Length: 241
Image (cartoon, rainbow, N blue to C red):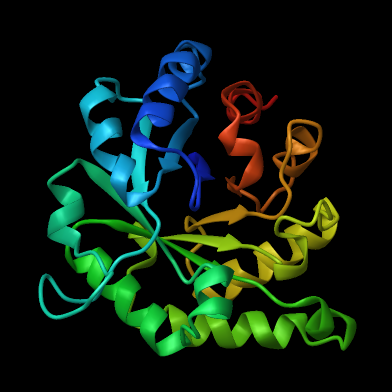
């Protein structure tokens, strides 16, 4: 059985003080969470130490929002695996659509980040997804295939999470129909060729659609944006039925 991973990506939100207040409210809401799932939060880099100082529990893991492919060097604004490991980080989001869009991240760079994350003892959460224009042109499968083949080259599927995030559904309030999302996740699983790889869905995940999303055969979790910023909302998502 694949263990579900419910991850919250805070993006550029939450100060250290706000993160501490969030955890104080959130932790009691997930203390009785089922053991068939893992909850992960990716705070901004500045708040990672706040998490590591208050995460004396085994049912909430920390993720970074990115990672570099070198341990140190002249890479302004980047962060290395050893810096993250020092604070108890277990996961690293790689290839999110926002760095792809705003900072022109290539599949080659994304692959280097994912491979180095694994070799450093972290689990990469590699994001893939098509734009609305690509979907409307019937190119979704082709785009996903390219991103998987190039972005996941030489990665270990047993230490990997892939998040299918249709770009047109991120932060728009639009959600990919659960059946359609499941088909893409099934395609990703076949492309990787490893049945036990964990595949998440991301894109306007909310408390009112989480149960349907998680009922799908090939969806093993979610990568949540805005809804993870509210502790009650994210707790409901984590405690999906």
